[in-house]
Length: 149
Picture 1 (cartoon, rainbow, N blue to C red):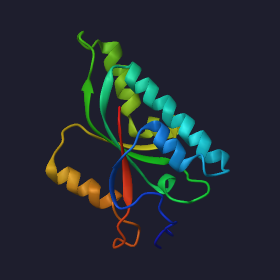
Picture 2: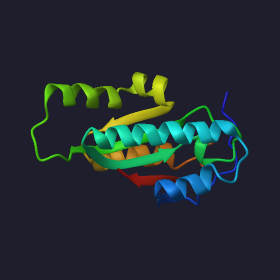
Picture 3: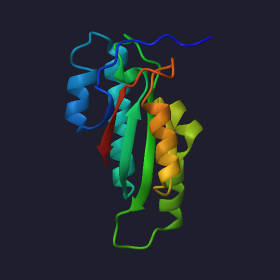
């Protein structure tokens, strides 16, 4: 059975957004507490991963970027995470970063459906553009957000 598609919040293609832009688009216009809670968890994860010394580009999509009243999670792809500190990564750093990029752990704690792509590869970008850039009917183009960490 095909999932129903709700009206999208973004025009087709990749849209570069800040966290403030994302809030204005996907939280502020809605009365849903769930949307606010998901945004707060997403913000907590972003703060944690930045404080852990990681940067990258994050593609954000899913029902969170539609008019669905109560999305279940936020879908994300983290592209080419980079160590940003001028010091070597310690085993404790590695463990913390691994936990912040662990699909199942991040899903349970932050309600993010997170996928990590360690290298920017044309074929992987094309794959994710196809997954994120089309509705469930696989023909209707839709937009997704890119947020810089």
